[in-house]
Image (cartoon, rainbow, N blue to C red; front, top):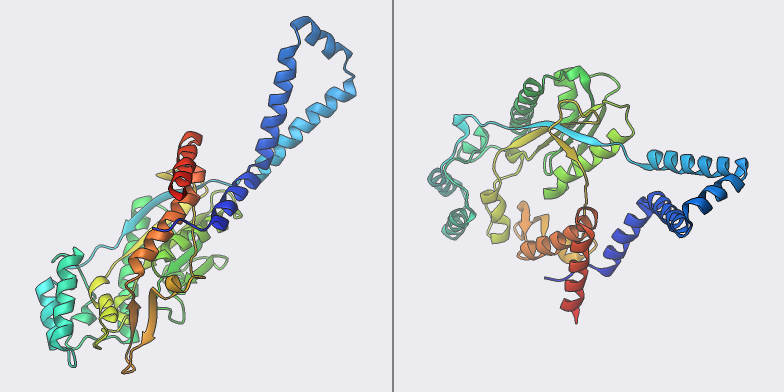
Length: 359
């Protein structure tokens, strides 16, 4: 596994220094003052205080207060996770593996080689008989209309949000921000607008929909909400809904094996998360968010690519480089988050091991 680019590591450490510049200056100033005071005896220290002019004492006190105020102003407002819920499937959406394979056999233009490949991938994927697909995909051939996708989105999102409001006791009127994410399904009006319309949210609510971002979409949504909450009034609430609408992801029937993988791997599901700047009733505190973007590299950019095959059929191509790309990105992300959460001794061990590995 390749190590993260040195430019990324330098940027992470420079950002760490910049973000804590005021605290660093205050600690250095305090350390110098204590060292100077330790060199003087009690009598000399008392005599020095008597000899100092009141203007000097006022200046030092004012500087300390100013530094403290500046530090408090620079410090980001804390964001808390109040609670979350996951979509609870209904029994009519369950599809055992044998049923999935048999349904795939009945789909026109699907050959035996493709069936055997999908069956082998199912057996190795860890997906069991308690997995679920929307009812529209149970038809032969599967139905993938816009209406089917809207029905699935409403079922997943609204039931998850209803459970979340019931669990937290927070009403829809208290929601200030709504952020939704779904990679392949981006209708007009958006998923965020569907939520605003369903729950009759306030006219000043901020709504955002994120699409096309793949597996990182949930993380991006949380990061966006964190930024919005930190500039919102104290006690504001944000609703994050993350899902993937399988009904809109057309069942691929071509011969490209890499484009057959989404048929096997994606299932029905979603989650709703409530975040707030109020500590009351919160379960967790959101400490750090770190995201590493590798789309500038061609291998990373093309590892999950929606395209047409040589017959003109549209599908999502999951390349063989996907696992390696994910591993490299994970290492870079761990490096970024490690400088924020690891103690200094662990960071030193990591740097030494990195140096030893490059020698």
